[in-house]
Image 1 (cartoon, rainbow, N blue to C red):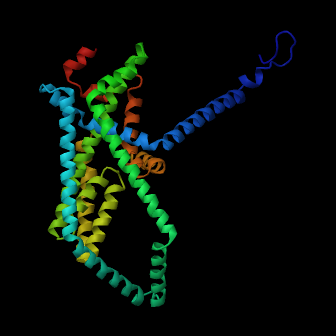
Image 2 (cartoon, one colour):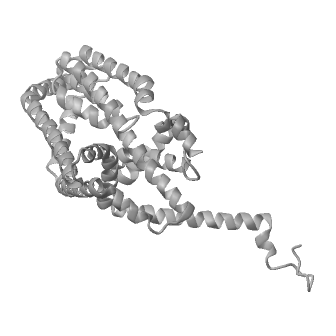
Image 3 (cartoon, rainbow, N blue to C red):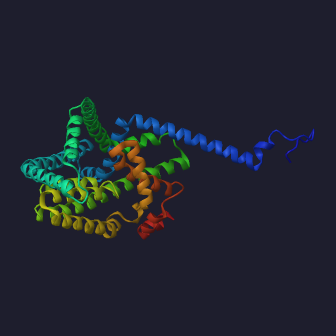
Length: 371
């Protein structure tokens, strides 16, 4: 079969049609796909000042679009419903920021004094502890820190921080503008992208258009509910124990809850450290116990109840997604990685047809109609 019919010599196609040849062709195809994917990812990272605001806007739009739809069903125009929703969000966000500023201003002096006392105790422990450190070494370390703060290297870092702040402000403005148009004209924008498709491809894109906002919205709303419960429970415990900056710490717990696995742990450690500095080791242990109990209740009760099994991802998948997102996009990438992964998995499930789990939960009449 591998020989030429006329001359009896081996065919020129033989090296490409045997098992090794097919494997080589497939390997070359995989290398090409990986190369193209790497180029796309590299381009997106270079344009992250635009890409990240777009992704954040898509996620926020999927989460709050039901409110805009509810207002429109009450007779409001798309423009008015969008403006009311955005203004309500700005008022709520501004109120939270105002509360944080007042809480920090009123309790900062107390925390600073407690922190100073805690550092003195730490220095005394290092000097008199089981591994004694010479006081001259501590003084040298402090002098090295002061030299670094006053050095040109630190100034360069401060300039980079100012640049990052400018990029953050630009990103916030982009998010506000893009979010406005997504809420106001989201259906029209998606219909525009569907124009080139026909037949089965059009049906597939429609399934994706129905699935992605539902998964994104459910994920964000479910995570927000869980984050609110965590913030109220842990923040309430901090307030009862009279830990300084309980309100800012509760807000930090709420925000970090949007980073699965590690966010709540980092926020709990921060709350325990503040309690250790300001209130002593006993209160810090109590705070740590509260954090552990709340995290256990979240994982065993709240997440299955609020998020459901359809949005549940394996912890290993979450860890890999968080790592990749952090490498590519920093903190914003860590926040966006898991919802994007959840959407990708949901799209794969509906790629060739409707999700069977959704059909199983559908009402009987609707299921009969689809048949």
